[in-house]
Amino acid sequence: MKATLLLNPREDKTAILTAGKILRDGGLVAIPTETVYGLGANALDENAVKNVYVAKGRPSDNPIIVHIADFEEIYPLVKSVPEKAKKLADAFWPGPLTIILPKSDKIPAVTSGGLDTVGIRMPSNEIAREVIRAAGVPIAAPSANISGLPSPACFEHVCDDMNGRIDAIVDGGDCAVGVESTVISLCSDVPVIYRPGGITPEQIEAVIGKTELYAAVLNPPEKGVKAASPGVMYKHYSPKAEITVIEGSLTDFENAVNRQYTDEKTGILCFEGEEDKFNLKCVTYGKCDDGLSQAARLFKALRELDEMGLARVFARCPEKKGVGLAVCNRLFRAAAFRIVKPYPIFGITGKTGAGKSEIAKIFKSKGYEIIDCDKISREITSDGSPFIDVLCENFGSEIAENGVLDRKKLAAIVFSDENKLKLLNSLTHPEITRIALSRVAAAIQNKKPALIDAPLLFECGIDKYCDFTVSVLAPENVRLDRIMARDNISYTDAKKRIDSQKLTDEYYIENSTYIIDNPDGNKYMSDVRKILF
Ligand code: TXA
Ligand code: MG
Image 1 (tube, rainbow, N blue to C red):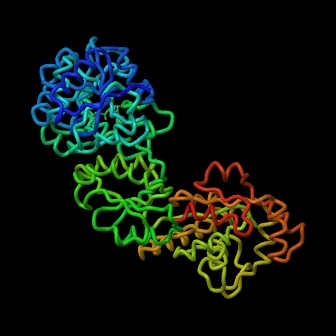
Image 2: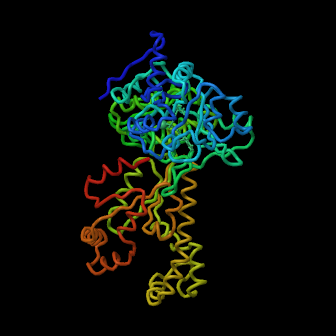
Image 3: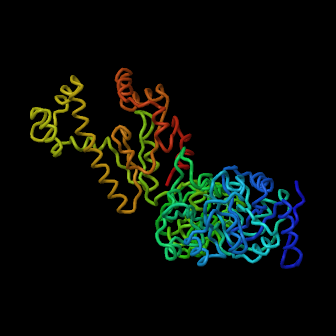
């Protein structure tokens, strides 16, 4: 434990000089900026910067932004300052914009996380710039939180994370913007926005023309791909509660929340004025149509949710434009990309006798439209179905009479010839899929979530159309007993049915969003509670 000095420049005139001296001497000082608090160190002092990684518990390949107080200070830090950098600085500095350029040799590799580029930013917060001037060196400063937690947007939150770990914390009150700076790289022909922030892509494009938005801004990082901006790869802003972002309007959100099993540990992260819609603990973050107000509140709200001891939180989704884009970027990471549609499509599958239909009933009781593929398969071969004509074309007109299928004749044909069986499947499976999907579309159109109950969900490729897939598994002996009792069939017939399903448990486990194991009685209810949307 370090004795951390708490400095308040509003009460103590020497605070800035003290902070500056600690930084110059290689110490660590958390400073307020207009975005979030930064954990500052002399950017040119390798040891000081190493200590930043230690204090934060941050992976050392994640580069740190270098903060300056006046524009001229950029020149020694980068190879050159292109026209676009000057234009951006003119328009937005001091302010919440970080510009990445090829670095000069002055920037040590620890500061740039081993990259040959460096991000430079001139904060608009007066205290920040005064401290940088007092230090007389550029200040490397990541957000002053423990790595992985929400960035601190007020003095108290820096103290929560850093008191006892660093030399000093400068109290500058609340951060005006509340989310970290926009990070833009000018190292390629078309500038790339790695991280959206207080300065929006629209504002930037008005000054330097076309930019690209880095794919990982709103999408989960691709597995196994090394990111150009490593910070985007790490699990970020993660509160203790599991957050699920539900897209759509307030009404859609209410509908989705009303379908969930909730308890005293379930909470809501919504916009101001929406609290009274819910009988659950609510935390608000800004106004529905105002990204700036959302940014100012988001990180504080995330920390408040944790203080309330919530385990599961449903969050309203901001509009993905303007500053709302930055809010989405942070919220999606806090939710570990658990972003759901208000009327999702589930697919449920599993081996015969595993108890899939019992689980489907729970979904039904929660307002899901159940689309039962077994039922569809009976429908398309029921008396008068136009699909029987298709079968006659392929298997001979003798398999039906007056639109009534002779199931025994068809069975005799397909079960004696593997190719004929394949042909039958190649006709029926797409037809069942087509009908199932048209019913899904109708359900969603009517603002109803849908559950496709399909024994061959994966084999028919229906899983591709689902937002979530659930596989229900149970040991073979349990399933044998169940289907023998349920369908009143012999052991041999039951075993034959079971053996006709080729996918292994491992396949289901690997390819499903959720696995419900060995359902018996109420045991699986707890599983369903966790997955219902
Ligand atoms: O608003 C902010 O930018 C705050 C305040 C303190 O200034 N700082 C901040 O730093 O958010 P940090 O370290 O938490 O986030 C820096 C982000 C990371 O995602 C990092 O990967 C990216 O910027 N970054 C920094 N330098 C980079 C570089 N040379 N190339 C690519 N990405 C870089
Ligand atoms: Mg950070």
